[in-house]
Length: 106
Image 1 (tube, rainbow, N blue to C red):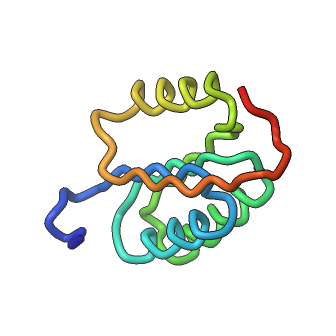
Image 2 (image 1 turned 30 degrees about the horizontal axis):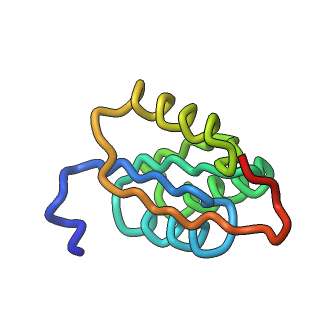
Image 3 (image 1 turned 90 degrees about the vertical axis):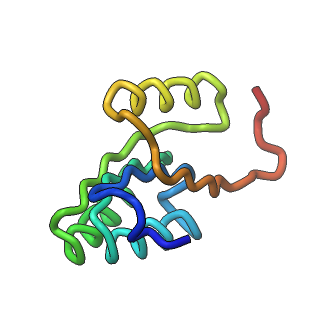
């Protein structure tokens, strides 16, 4: 995928983005392009650190943290609605949520 063929500012959503692959990928993408990044996760403290790091490498990147537990279907709907109100389209959707042995199911 060549991101230079896309428009000026890309909208990217990273679900499970406060740790692991989601975290690393969001940081890497923000270093190379002008992005509006929606970071979806449960760890507000980690999201703040990621935001600081992203802005340290790319002052023009815009990061919005959505503090949601996407293991709940209602939270998934809420995330979609929040983004839908603000954005015309999403250019990149990165899903990297973790799993928990013995976790709750909805």
